[in-house]
Length: 117
Image 1 (cartoon, rainbow, N blue to C red):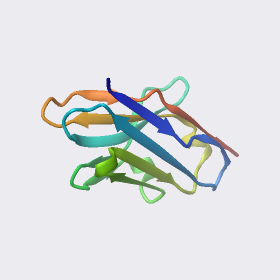
Image 2: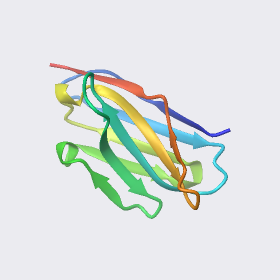
Image 3: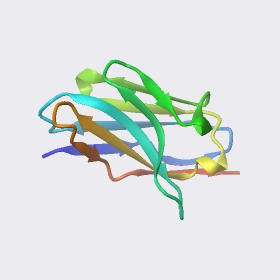
């Protein structure tokens, strides 16, 4: 059974930092892409950052220069270091893992990030 579990969310003041972690387990094949998405109240889920198995990164314009995505392939784990947080970063952050070969997508249940002004 595939599980994708996020951790590291919380409440932080504007200008502060948080580090999110996500671990995927139970996936038979290797994981191609891992990424972070977020959904604020009343808004659609949006891409935050993704990273390929080979380490190619892509970021939403709104987080470039503030957030950094990284991964440990051997542990099927991805991280999101979030610095200089703003109130508009408040959202539920979701992790997604895409399995190589089948291209199946697996989502975590999300972790809440709240940035106070």
